[in-house]
Structures are given as structure tokens and as C-alpha cells.
Amino acid sequence: MPAQRLLFAVSGASGMPLAAYVLENLRTLAELEIHLLISNMARTVLASEGVSNLENLAHVLHAADDLAAAPASGSWQSLGMIVCPCSMASLAAIATGLGHNLIHRAADCMLKERRPLVLVPRETPLNRVHLTNMLAAHDAGAILMPFMPAFYTGSSDLKLLAREFTGRLLDQFGVQHSLCTRWQGKHPVNSL
Ligand SMILES: Cc1cc2nc3c(=O)[nH]c(=O)nc-3n(C[C@H](O)[C@H](O)[C@H](O)COP(=O)(O)O)c2cc1C
Image (cartoon, rainbow, N blue to C red; front, side, top):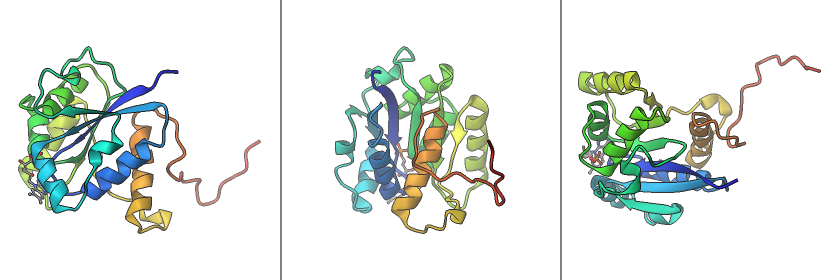
């Protein structure tokens, strides 16, 4: 089966180590072809947070200001798109349909083509504008998935939490994987 494209966008919010770990986990799935977008501000935050060589984790890197790149068209086929981390500025642009860079335009295409668009917003505390934009994005079809680890897995190691989170992200795209633990119930009953 040919590899399936997954678009992964990194915008300029805090959380670059998480983005790097998620990308590393995505790369363990041979059936995925990872297309990466990095916003201009994301490059600044990557440097601030000491994360380098993110590009090496992608199969294909697109320039974030290239509005003529393939993912700028709804005719470009993919499983969908993840924006991780998603800044409040990118969230606002996506929620209001602005296509000023390739991240916003590609997200717009995902929504119009009804492909999964998963946003991993990062800001705290959230003001009314943030919340309103999240609701608008949700109503347009986006999946809002902040990084909120399940602490019942017993882990507090970011690498392991990111692995779990990658699994939960992949669930949104219907990709089979064994990256996350699944709650079996407190008193599982053996089935035949
Ligand atoms: C070190 C650093 C950390 C930042 N963290 C956040 C953040 O967590 N959330 C956020 O919404 N913006 C954050 N910003 C501000 C964004 O980078 C800024 O709003 C920018 O316009 C986002 O542009 P982009 O979405 O095109 O990447 C941060 C900026 C810097 C320099």
C-alpha cells in the first residue's frame, strides 16, 4: 500500500519538545508520509526552546510562505492535518478563514474537503477571544485537542506522555497503531 500523507504544521507557540516527540513517534509508522510546515515564528520558538533539526523528521518540508505549494489546494490528497503546537494567532486565522500563510490555507482546505484537522492549542489562561475562536474552529469541523495528559497511565515523563498523545492523535485519523494504552475498565470481564 502506498504511504499516506499526513500534514504536520508547527506554529509559534510554546511546546516544541512535544512537537519533536510527536513527530518522532509518527515516523515509526511506515505507512505515513509526513509533510511538515514550520511558521516563521515557530522557528524563533524552536530556537528559544532548544529544539533543532525538526526538518529531519519529515519526509517532505514545505515553505510556510509558499501559497503555491501542493497543500494549498483541496485537490492535494492526504489523511488530514495536525497543527502542534497551535498558537492563538494561527487558531484565529484558521477560525476566521484567513489564508495568509500555507498553514492557514492548508487548514482551510482540510475543513472544506472535510478531512480531519486537529489543532493542539497552547496558551494559558484562555481569554474570551481564544475560547470563541476555538468554538468557531470546532463548529467549522476542526478537532480541538490540547495536550492534556491522562495521568492515570502512571507516567510523568514527557517522552512517554508524548507517545500516548501521538496515539490519541492518530485515533482521529483512523490510523492503526499501538502507541497508547487503552483503558480496559476497572473490572474487565473476560470475553469469549
Ligand atoms: C518564546 C515564545 C513563546 C510563545 N508562546 C506562545 C504560546 O504558547 N501560545 C501562543 O499563542 N503564542 C505564543 N507566542 C506568540 C506567537 O509566536 C505569536 O503570536 C506569533 O504571531 C504566532 O505566529 P504563527 O501562529 O504564525 O506561528 C510565543 C512567542 C515566543 C517568542
